[in-house]
Image (cartoon, rainbow over all chains, first blue to last red; front, side, top):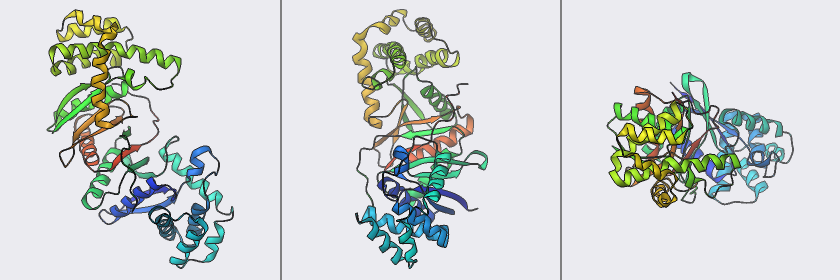
Length: 196
Length: 203
């Protein structure tokens, strides 16, 4: 049976990027269906859009245009440019990602408008609803006790597990998430985050 | 599998996780090496409220007694003495530390004079030293409990947590252990968390 997963990310967050790459790896190993969604570092920090809203607006524009699958593709195309290539020219990298996927220019243009801000905020709120306040990005929504949804911040990773390790992390997360009162597991972030 | 488990006897979350470990020992091939850490040391440099400071000041007392008891009698006294204290503090919800300590020492068959360590700061170095072994396992900036197992490469991996409530029992406890081991042994995992919607449920 396919397991539905929700994954909320701000593609500008390198930690969230590493986790997204892990979940992408899990897609090849387990029967999961990921709905790639957005949340915003800016909304997390102080409730104001202090960080760049343009990438998440573009992703929501892509969702309105072509659905969740297209939104996921654009999320990865943008995230790779920011986190792997180290590209800092946000308007250019959005335009480039949109072109790579043969999506209409209107998506690039929408990133400079407030047209999709309500969609971004609603998506962000849905993430906090599930994972709770006071956490961060990414948030993952998985089947919890009795099949209801449960959300966690993380798993936060310093590097992306590949192959068998990726699958084991998924299996372990499902088990912990199925315990009604599992709240936290944490260690110090001693290593620098590695994006690829 | 061997695991090392560090607790402060005053922490209700650590208490719940410790009772989970006791369950795990029944249903999995796991041996727990019980160890001591300190809320007092954890919060020494933190900016906390006056009320919390008072609470934290109290936590030094059982920790000192536990540390001196281990110094005299070895690691095997940590679990029974911690459990005797914890049952009174968390299950019976008592506050009278002096009586709790005296009764716990008597229950475990240890000398009554160990209780004097509770108010003697000369044992703080023992508390700090054992706390440092927990921080070495999980890294700084976390809390109690800390748990460590061997990674797949044989090197120990330590985490703060798992924070859970209420205590999983029987096979549920075993499954949670299996999940914990799967996750802990994946290199690079540093945090999984959600906002706590329930307080610690001690049963």
